[in-house]
Structure formats: C-alpha cells, structure tokens
Length: 177
Image 1 (tube, rainbow, N blue to C red):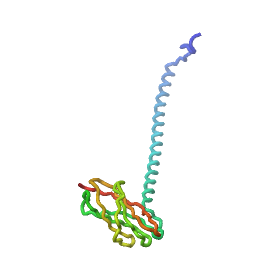
Image 2 (cartoon, one colour):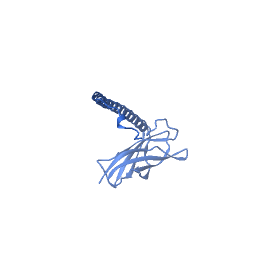
Image 3 (tube, rainbow, N blue to C red):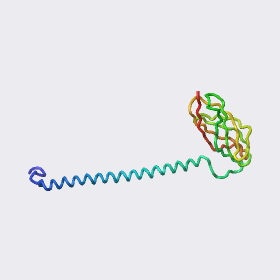
Image 4 (tube, rainbow, N blue to C red):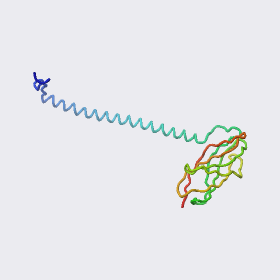
C-alpha cells in the first residue's frame, strides 16, 4: 500500500473551474475589505463612546473638588487661592496668598498650610480675617526655587473644641530666578 492519498485521487481542475476559483478569490478579497471597514467603523464607534464617557467622568469629578452641599455649624470650606504678585514671583522671596473661603458661623481658624508640588506642609498663622460671604484672609509664604509649582492649601480650625481640616484647593505658580 502506498501513501494515504495518491496524485491519482486529487481532483482535476478544469480551466473554467480555475477561472471561477480566481473570481471567487477576488470577491473574497472585496469581502475581506468590507469586513475590515466594518470592524474599523465599529472600533471607532467604541473608542468615541469610551472617550466621551471618560470626558464625562472627568467633568463630574472636577465638580467634586469643591463640595456644594450646605455647611454644618462651625464648618469651613475653601473656595480658592489667589497669589498676589506684582509681575512675577522671584525665587526664595515672600509672596502674599489670598485665601477665599466660606464658613458657617465664625470658627476659630488656627493656621493655613500649603504644599509646594507635594513638598510640605508649610504652615502660617492666620491673622486679620475679613468675615463675609465669601470670607477672605491674606497670608505670606516663602516661595521655592525657580520652576512651576502647584500650590495646594488647606486650613486647620477648631469646631466644637476639636481640631478639623478644611478641603484642599490649589493654584499654579511660576517662580522665576
């Protein structure tokens, strides 16, 4: 016995069948192009929906940085930090920071603390609070070396005799030479 198959058993393909096979192969290529295009459009649609969802989540989470619910008695909520500069901030100099906040009542504000791009905290005493809606106080902090920093601040205060911490707010500062 010979091998499992023999050349004699292979079907003979006529020229007409060969031309038909090539035509079908060509149509298979166009089908593959159509399938590729269909999958491309489907993946593009998925990515568009994914990116739209990501943008939506970022927008929702950005609103979470400043709580919007009402304050409890004696609670403090920071609204923003503003760096008071005349021109640009020089390295290793004192700069004035305006802290804008809201409070329910007049809690005892102990100190304001700041992080320079995660270095810190550097805390200062709070003096001369201008109570109102919103309330404001000014404080002085020492700038770092030259560079761009993210200044993050919060307040330590007393509420019912217990020390508490406000939310954190931030601003970007560029320090020159």
